Image (cartoon, rainbow over all chains, first blue to last red; front, side, top):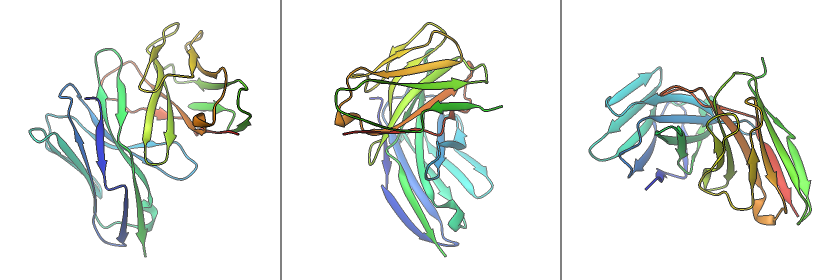
Length: 113
Length: 113
């Protein structure tokens, strides 16, 4: 019940295209849904995050869409660039004095010129 | 201001050897976490701590022990390393507040032969 399912495992997009990564969860106790970006040899870094009382959040070319009833959320990268090539993790936070982040399995995005 | 520093960055162990990974943070964060990252499995929580002197088990705690004697340090120990513990280990920290960014170290690549 604390799992977060992420798809696809890998994604190849042409420069200028839209990259879409999807995540689904079961536990309605999750109260915060961040996306992390990881470049090779580096630790993950926060990209964008959303709370469940909001259906969409946009920051530049990155947008999170959140469907509370379906327990799904997705990351959209508009006008994808080669510099966006990285591994993306969705996550969900389990509160109650632990603030545990439960991560999805990751999506390796490759953007070709 | 270093943020989250992991020591060592790389290590090769023989089966049965022991070692300790150190995570040090200078941000005065309350919560600290140890994750392991394996291909296709994302980031899985090993152990975590919600404050100095406290520790708790995560999703995959077997074969690991932790200690948090000082607020700024979180140690991950492997008493008798096994090849299944070959992984990249990440430490992360969170301040003691809601909906905030987790900060990750650069990772430790451990190989057990």
